[in-house]
Structure formats: C-alpha cells, structure tokens
Length: 91
Image (cartoon, rainbow, N blue to C red; front, top):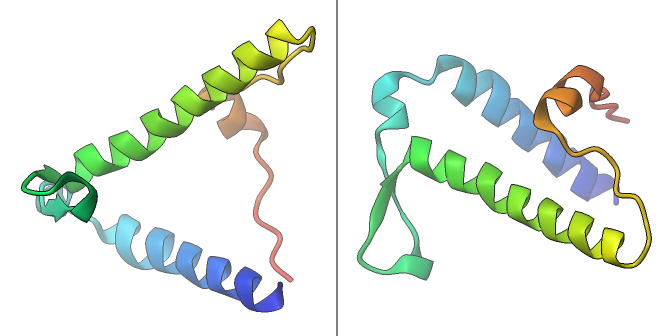
C-alpha cells in the first residue's frame, strides 16, 4: 500500500502544482484521443467534464439504489464537498 499511496501523492502534485496551476486556455483546447472511441478526439476541457459528469451519474445510481433498499444516501452535492472536504493526509 505504501507504494500505491506514494504514487497517488506524486500524481496529485504533478496534476495540481505542475500542470493545472499553469494550464492555459490553449492547453485546455488541446486534443485528446482515446482507444475506446476510435477516430474521435476531444479537448482537454471536454475530457475533464466527462470525468466529473461520469462519476456524477454513478453517484446518482448509487443513491437511487440505496433509497430503493430503504437507506438514506449521503449528500453528494459538489459545493458541499468543496466546503467539507478534508485535505489529503499523506504519510
């Protein structure tokens, strides 16, 4: 697990401090291609939107299923997560 944690920590640093904080409008419009959708390309901005919207759909599915089983799902509102999220605690 230590190696996995270290890799996540390294990735967070690369993404937040070395890429996203210096990302320009041109960077956000750069093309991204995936082997899962052959022949199509998307902008970095569109790919980032896909990541957030895809997980939103799964959170909604989980909440609906939990309700159907008589449970109460936790709050999944993004703005509440921003307010309440804990900072990463790396060992």
